[in-house]
Length: 382
Ligand SMILES: *Cc1c(COP(=O)(O)O)cnc(C)c1O
View (tube, rainbow, N blue to C red):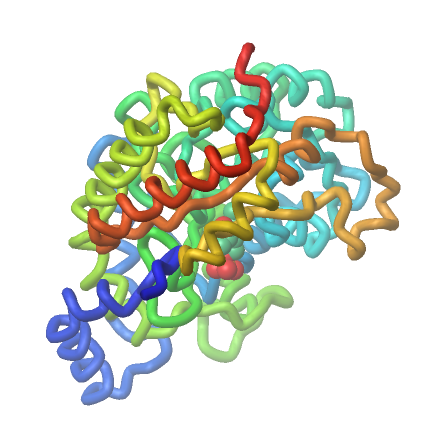
């Protein structure tokens, strides 16, 4: 029997009748594009974030998380000399979005303990050309939003959150998505809140940006045949919105289940010569991934796979070393903590429905592998 990194079938079974009803309702109405479910989902998602909000945000949905980033950055009207600070340790789409809007990405190294943007190095990279910070709440772990909002204010920079992996997370009791100037979400099926296909959204407390994003995502128009600028077709499907409305109601309980599994992993793996995820005291993490670090990661990876446990590497190649970005001129050694992490990180299976017995098998197999290889720890002395 195989243990998957993520299994969407089990979750589907728990919402099958509700989900199919919601789909049937859309099919009967045939309001596939911009149906009422789209706007209801936008309202419900912003209400969800505002439960414990910092700013009160509104939501504009779009076709996927990558587009959410592109649309948000596009609304800032950056020029080709404007610099955007972002981590290199993230999914490629974060960097892609900066380049797609014609701005210049400036990659910042991570704090090796959280694997998130290092704020000291971030501040050092701010120049007169810097216009925005694009912070990524990787693995469901929120960045220090108090420190980031203070930095953004001090240097008058836009603060955009890539919250694709952090639906429901919070910093100091305030939901991720309500801290920055804008936040971008992905509802890719494997995310904590996932549609049955591609989906995304931008949230902000600034109505001007949101209006611009709504028009950009719909051919630059407000009225049917008047196009005020050249935009995109990046609307959220009504069918996806209908499913997201059903699933949003379960998001908190699913995140709780992820948390229980994470706590189990943390306690079982405590003395195992591994670097475990660091929980920042102000953070409520939503455990999109459970990522450990080990020196002999590749051996562990193979051993887990041999035992039919699917483990992952998020992500094996940092953005600054991707072939597509070679022209930017980065080289190996530019971001040492990022590059080191790519060699040591290992994602363990985690999803709300993962049976406890399987989580036990994961930790058992991992411990056996560590002993058999007598793996040496990464340096945990800070
Ligand atoms: C998933 C993801 C995206 C892109 O979202 P899509 O919906 O797949 O386009 C962007 N950034 C991060 C950090 C992600 O995990």
